[in-house]
Length: 323
Image (cartoon, rainbow, N blue to C red):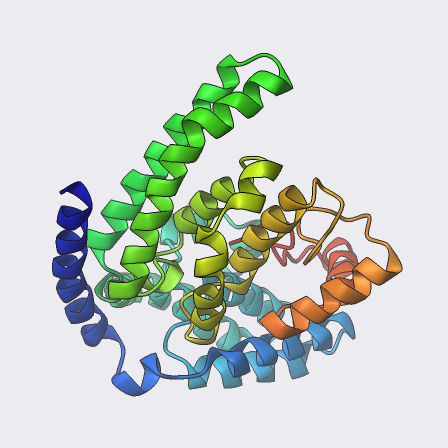
């Protein structure tokens, strides 16, 4: 009865979601292949590594001109690169794009790398334009589905807190398998039903919080025995990969989920994307780079070099964050 009610609720909220989506994105945009998007972002990052900042700005500009929905981390990086390259007009174009894709003004104000731009006339103009830009973002996301996933996330966090009151690893395993696992199965079934009616509830649909990927990662990290017996993540995995191409899933979120699954299922003997671990052997690095290439992520070598550029320039590429 409860599951049927949930499915009815999801179908009804999907109507609202689609109405919301239609006010923001054209049907052509929702059908765009985000494989190219991620390839172009990776190309821009490789240009940054080579310190070819104006060329990277050109690539970002091409991407931003071609897609209405943009992942917020890309907006933030593009803004910094443009400022570093001295291309102020492009920087404010990327900043406005960020506001249209969920970047809050109060958050932007706190960024140290934006301080020098606050005296520019374009800053005042952009701040005045912020309510309109924010409205574009709010018209795209579904507040109904966002609230459902937010509550699911809160339930997940509350359930996970129970492990803090167990004092041995054996007791934690028992709690995870006896208490958390049944809860997690219900959570996964809700997400599967939601994906069938609304698509993956990621940044494009509910905003910049990565609640769904945390729920799935919790499911994947319960225990080795649970991961081996689990059928829900293997079932949803192809759908997640397809959702990357639709712009519904940030590939970094998928890599985070997959890393937990591979690590826990193998008793921490195997590695996938190298998100959770940084001590990969050469064969593991080759495998990780192959997986990253398929998902549209930067190589581990590019990631290492970007970290060096961070130290050199003070720019932030959010290497250690899913968002």
